[in-house]
Image (cartoon, rainbow, N blue to C red; front, side, top):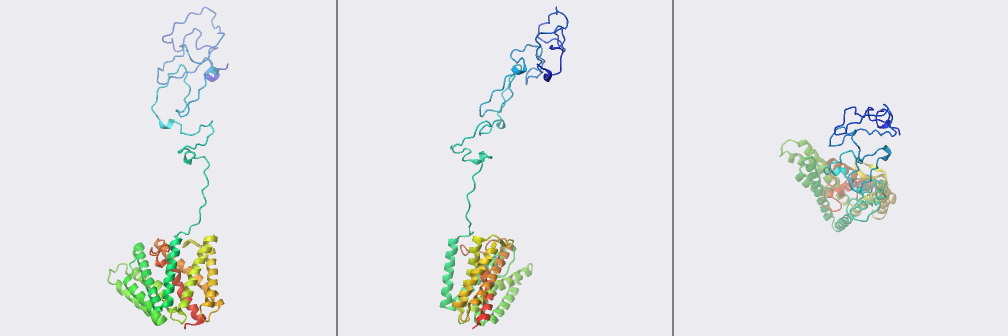
Length: 423
């Protein structure tokens, strides 16, 4: 056997000098070496293997190479193989040799124990027992995870509540519109006041802007009534007086923030009551109720077409930074639905109306309603809110329903005046 791998080369087959003495001196406790009666340098017929010195852990570190090895291996190929450890025991340690001291018991170390699970040479079997890897995939991170179930598209609102509230509002509006015109004017004034309250409340909460609500509410209601009684001239006069009232009312408070407060007040007066005044001016014509009904139908149909087509076929965002839910496909749906509804309304509801005029009217309504919706979305993004209020379940607030109606009112009023006149 070649023993070069076990240590430095020695003289042929001997531990040390030929006289049997150790290079370090006699071994303590060993018998004195007998004198050599044979020839000097005679070789042994059976050379002994050289075992490297390995100090016993925790025991006497003296060199016991000269002592007899009572139980250790004589040759390398006789080294016993380590026995497999039982499952769940600490990691296997090298098999102790006979001349090594027995390892001392060690304290419990949680990290030295194998984690539960199949051993490398075992095939993992599914287990129906609760709490195992089959019911808790996190115990086996490498195991394939089941594919998540496909989720259905969500409208983002309670459709049942939204439809119920919408039908209720429609009944109130239609009843007041065709029974007594003055009652419908009152409905417009109430909607304007509530919308102003929501807008000024959100401005104060999110931006610290205190637009005076009292002059806005009084002036807004007066603006709607003036538009119905005195037409456009009365609306402009009421708008000017409301602006003056806002400037004076704010003077009763400290000057800090005066400019931003009155600017927000003038904007609110124009955005909500002044635009709503055009609905009251439509009502003054002989076929006023049908003009208002056409205006409401086209706006609602445009919004419905945009929602239906965009929800089903929407892929390309229209204005992702303003309103991520709107798509170009939804805009095409709004245009198509509104043009068809416009042709029908102009042909059957409006005196002296023509279907082609309805196509133009529907196209204009789809554009103005979309821009109005995007405009209020821009305001809500700036304020960091989703809805202007919570008054209408499934819809948000009053302003969330007026966002498309307010910019569309002057467009419909103007086109109807051009097509069939103001009488």
